[in-house]
Length: 396
Image 1 (cartoon, rainbow, N blue to C red):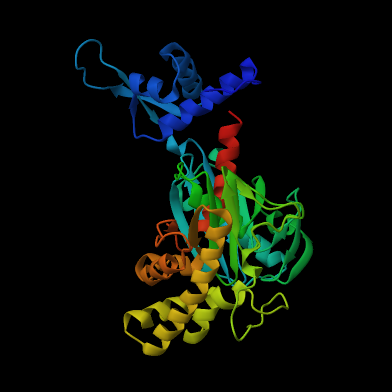
Image 2: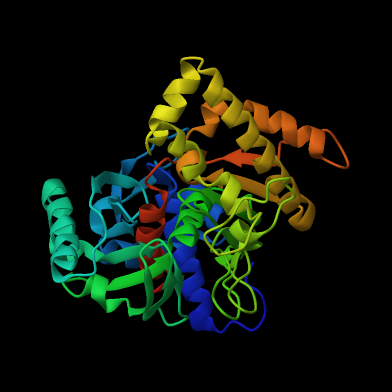
């Protein structure tokens, strides 16, 4: 139902977008099913379908078998009508994804490439985009743009990387990353991008906290289906909260600064921020990978092999993580998704975390609010690409 205040043009746009989303949620859909999903009369929906077909976004694909009367026409999405590329810049790697108009992952690549502030690095990003498109045979005219996720704080206009500890940068124009890329570019914090990827397809989760356990602890805050960034745009650096589908970043941009919440621990380990006892100091992926030569996968290989030293380290890690996650649950009373590099292994190794959370829960022995990431290494690049997909859909 369209709320009061929307004019006729707004209503038509909303209905067109709703029609498109309904079609793209299926392999194919019949006229009656589509009208029922959109909640409009068939003549109204048909006009939207015709417009989407003229744009090359929807196609008619025959009919459904009749149970009596005229056969219903079938419509299907043209998923390859548009594409978007996502890049994730990290201290030592570049992740790249190609997604279609439905937001589905078409291709993912990750290359070891230490960050350097130089022309060669910028040119390498452009070459990676070009290679990705060529491998899939994507016409350049179908490419909406390139989303770039960065490990740091961006200003509200997406023009300046205000600060990045991982890249050793402060006050750098983001154009330095995109200057060689021949497509429109959008920029987003890496944890916020990962949060966008995680909330996609979880329409029942209007509010949630996304906690990223990578080389630093990051995340995002979503409320009403959108990111919340805060007044100083630091919200989500180290964590994220989603409320009513929107990402929260806070009045000063530090909303969701989950990695720098202090937890009680006897040793008060030093954090990269200069303080002691932060979640980042106990729950980043580096805490684990440092025990296996910087290779996180080897750490979990060791757990599978029954290495007692690594198991003890994992138990201690989960104990700290349980405190952090439980605190988030108590504050926000919503689901918590744990992702990032470590999050990608939790579907296999996360059962003890659920048990710890059930014991920590003040009101009931329940940990069903905890969700594990659907991704491993591709989430930030995917979320960056989805920025372009969603922008295109909203422009229809």
